[in-house]
Image: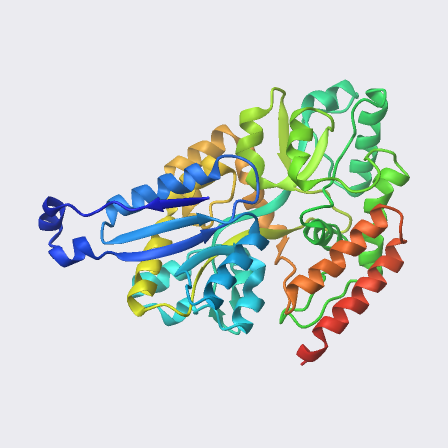
Length: 427
């Protein structure tokens, strides 16, 4: 889907703004590849934002190209670069950083800063959301469509099972026991919990491992630690939700349909992105809550989602225009409105200090859960050869959940595959 978005500068506006006639005829044209990874009318929200931007900046036009999920978007953006038709900017996975740097595809924002105001802007974001966008003291990615994994629970289902509807699970043991109680009370008609294992299995598993006190990768993207005993224990727990507790369906659970499973009340709890929050609020006809993920030894969730990047093979004028657009999109008031519209996070503390988002959080407390969970967050799994490394872990998780391998066997195999992919990057 392509959306051509351009508001021409009228002669009157040119006079008022002091713009030259040439500027009206020759705006700086930007192409932006944009991923739509969860349900909902995000394309409409982005289109409206771009319309508003162009109305305020008639010397810049933006073509938004909706390119599928994050992986599809990266592939299309890189193919455009190889074809000599590089976009000026994109929202891509925050974890694409190493691949983009290795291919010399992006520029550091530090090199584009010209004023103290711009430097203050670069320092204004939550540090936890900046981790995946920085390397060797340079910032390459600006957070925008960002999330953490949160727990959604059906308060009505909890009450029907004799559980306190206002109390979500605090620990792994709590979640297993509560999920089993819901399953039993429903006579087998409702699952207690569903944790997705397609789409982004590595991301969900990273949360389990981190909750067990284990970080899966090194800070420099050159090593992973999939076969650590704490990681094995985390995958064993995930498998036990179906095999031991009979509280979750066997096999894999689809990422793309999980929100609908929750809306249709086929499960009382789900783990999913906070980016689904507004859609769940709009669609659920039952009382629900949102909580931080349960813990084993500590709370925790990896951050997730997309960052803005500016591409290398572009002119200085285009890079300045892209900077103008990105700064406009991440303005606190706009970030606040974006968070309310979508459920994604306001990416800076200033966004949550706006009257708009402050009032929204006061009236709808779940809107603050992802932000508050940042205190217990970790950077998303990101390494060199990221696609191969994540694929190895995805396959391991699914092999364990479908009973093809034990968790230990699966993670040992994933470790060996990742080690082979990363061998030439060892420092």
